[in-house]
Amino acid sequence: MKAYNPHEIEPRLQLAWEEAGLFCVPENSDAPKKYVLEMFPYPSGDMHMGHASNYTYGDVAARYAKMQGFDVLHPMGWDAFGLPAENAAVKHHSHPALWTYQNIETQRKSFTRMGFSYDWDRKVVACDPEYYRWGQWIFLKFWERGLVERRNSPVNWCPSCATVLANEQVIEGRCWRCDSEVEKRDLTQWYYKITDYAQELLDDLNQLEGWPERVKQQQANWIGRSEGANVDFILCDPQGNAPAEPTEDDIITVFTTRADTLFGCSFFLLAPESKLVPQLVAGTEYEQPVMELVEAAKKVTAVQRAQGDHEKHGAFTGRYVVNPINGEKVPVWVADYIVADYGTGAVMAVPCGDTRDFEFARKYDLPIIPIILSEDDPLYPSLKDEQNRVVTEVDWPEAYAAEGTLVQSGPYTGMAGGKHSEGEAAIVAALEEAGRGKRTVEFRLRDWLISRQRYWGNPIPAIHCETCGVVPVPEEDLPVRLPEDIDLAAGETLAT
Image (cartoon, rainbow, N blue to C red; front, side, top):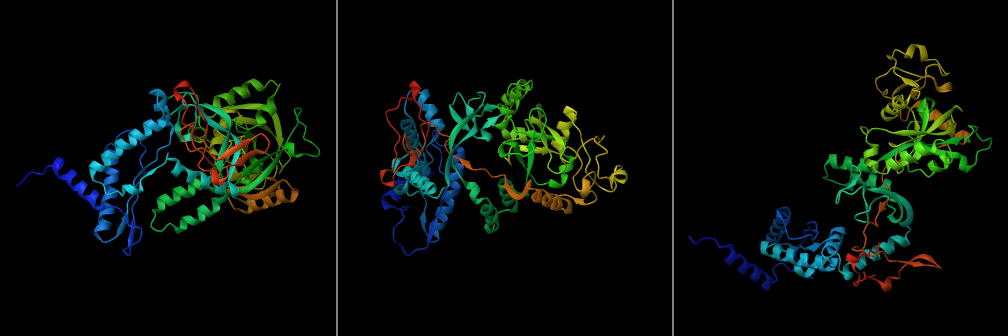
């Protein structure tokens, strides 16, 4: 038998396929249609075995459909914007476009050698102006609908890469790419307001037929719907006096799913990023330790801080707030396990029923007040009818699983406690009647920050006018092109 010689056979057949237009898709055809798309690669160099594996699977699907008589649209393209290209250009005293297009050509030749059945007439390159104009067009359409917003917010900043990092790109306080120490900076960023669709996104998970339940549950957890109430605590003045007629500036609102545990609130927590923190401690003996904590928290990601096993650190502000359900004053602390991007960035700490609050209270010797017990708890017989505060410390090894009967909870003692419980409903109703609370729904989902690139990214189609402010570029003037005469090696960068 004649030996198989891939260097002779494959180029010859690939040329015949190309000349015959075998993989080109006709515009008008009566044949059934099939669209096969694999994730576009990033042109960081030549193909590797991961590419070969991934695109072989897609090619098998495309060829199988073609053999069944389908007109198969099977395109290839490159997700070609990004920081690696810019960093490579700086390193090699080049331009990211040059580096990117060279790698695209290298990868295209390798894809061709593999014999993949791509319609190269429909090639997509994300850094081509005639392609990225449509990204700008979509941005303008979102802007018209009020679905993009420009606002100031704290972000993870790598001083070496000179770019913003997602929480997942910060590893133990350092940049995942260059290992530099990451800083927290307040920067003006653009956001897509995906939170406007949080409930719709959650509801429509039911339409994903065939998706594994495990994956749908992960998506639901990411959206993170929580039903609860906003509760208004009143900030006391530096002398500890509560204002007779609180103004908006005197109110700190917390979101809680467990208003039934309000009688167990023994301290109050603010996230280090809270804009209130510097105001509360300015010029006081508490300023230095509090601001040291704030600076230390900047070096740890919000994800790491919120993890239950992360060591917790706190500092007392010297200020107090009034609990709206019982009028008691509770101390205000800053704690690094509180994050600013969930709820209001403020927390009513109930250590008897929350593991993290329990650990924090133990560390800083703060009261742990039992207010919800099961009938088999040793404390239950003596507290089951007790409305007043009798016990303010427990010898428990851990927080109590907060389901049971309310104790030491004023007129609500004896009611069932828990989410959506009798006690929770009664306390929220009392807060609403007093104008100190309101039922609401919170989502863990946050708006999508999109302005992370430096130079090598799709320019945002906005005009910064001294007279009119920030206004959209007219559609007829798209695309807004990247300048080509920039010298990145000389330190020139343009935020997009």
